[in-house]
Length: 494
Image 1 (cartoon, rainbow, N blue to C red):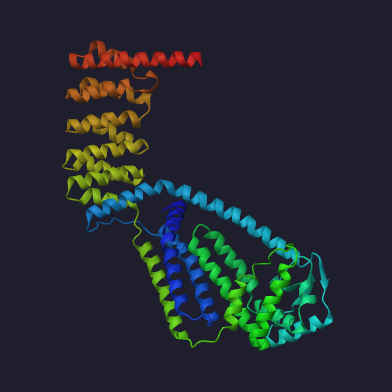
Image 2 (tube, rainbow, N blue to C red; image 1 turned 60 degrees about the vertical axis):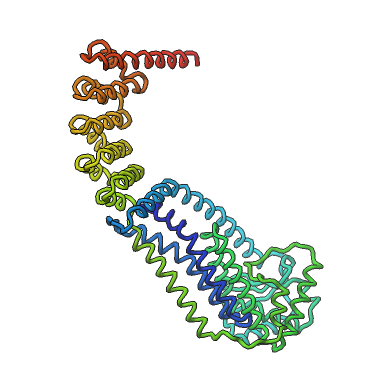
């Protein structure tokens, strides 16, 4: 299977795969207590990674799998499935094109935002008081943050934010330095240091890349929001563990929000590290602690089950992803019901796959039902290339069944160019033993583009030994000559 087809099918399969993953996460989050932020964050993050891995694994398996003929137990269901595939496959390049365009636009936006975030650490910044730097060093030691972290006052941001990964910088708005008590400022610094300790800036970039690749699915955006919310809860818990007072921390959050609301909206969000609903975070911090009814080991078991189940589903998709062409070939050659074989042959023609050439020729030659043979002839007409044209010529000349030869004559005009098919049609119109085949050849000569068959048609109209064929040629000649003349006059006038 080509890369485009594999990618298109992977995108389509991801619609149900991502929905299943999000539904499973929603079920788990409904059970795991809100206090267990690390477990909830881990489940959401694992689900987001699984959401990326599922279409990737599906696409790789579809691209690498060797096609093999499959004879299903239910012919009708197999034909219907093959019909669905052949209907969807022509749209796959457009699906991939739209997806790629969306990824490109969103990637440019992410890059622009990343460049803006990098400039925040160098734009309109000032050193903070020595007491603030000492508090940062003390808190970094308590949180075991070994990397050097700078803290600067910023006139651009409205809330504390972390910028950078290798050399992280904590940006504090001027309102935080003047409007908060030292204790409140300490707990907010502890929250930002928790982001540094957890490498959340880098994780957020990876998360944003996953959002871009799967931008088309609302379930992915929902899971990503859950990741950001639980990330903030995890940092809240670390900050509370350092300062030892959840109510102090909650008051600091509310005070910071109050100061932000009084400040003109001049800031840009830095790397998305300030996500989460503020009042929901405060309510979670000050609400009475409840006994966790869901053990952590059980959450781990459920998460592992989620991974295994979705991974097995992806493997099943890949293992049963035989190409539609090979399935249709098997059905057309093995089904006992002639109507089912005929429909399989019709869908085989719709694939326009060159691999169908030899099976179609064999069906025209060996199938016991003339309707199936005629359908195979029409399918040959759908194939491009000299092989299909040569097969149609042979069928039109030598097939023992007149109705099949007639169908081959009809398809010859579509499959071959005018100059090479005119002599052949003229010969069939004179030599075929069946009058209906001869008249079909006359009809095809009359329908040749740009009047290419009018000379041969005129000769048949005057010299053919069969009066019925001569009359048919004259009638077609009159109509065709009038049409060519009208077309020529229109072209001259234009």
